[in-house]
Length: 84
Image 1 (cartoon, rainbow, N blue to C red):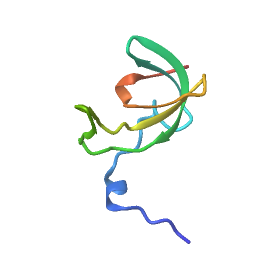
Image 2 (image 1 turned 90 degrees about the vertical axis):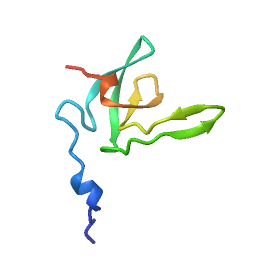
Image 3 (image 1 turned 30 degrees about the horizontal axis):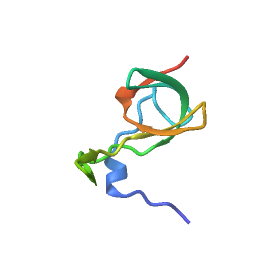
C-alpha cells in the first residue's frame, strides 16, 4: 500500500539541513539552554493561535525535541541551535 501525500505536505518545504529528525540541538527558552534531539518535524504550520482560556493563547510549534533529561518540548526553529 502506498502512502499518498496531501497537497499541503507536497507544498511544505523540507526541514533545513541544520534541523531535521535526529539532529542534536541546543534548545533556548527563557534564558535557559538545554540539549536534546529533534524527534519530529511537523512541517510548516498555519499561523493560528489557540485560546487555552484565561487569556492564554499558544501557537503550534514546528519541532518536537526530546531533551536529554527526558522532557519533550515543542519549539520553532528560532529556539534551536545545531550541535556539532
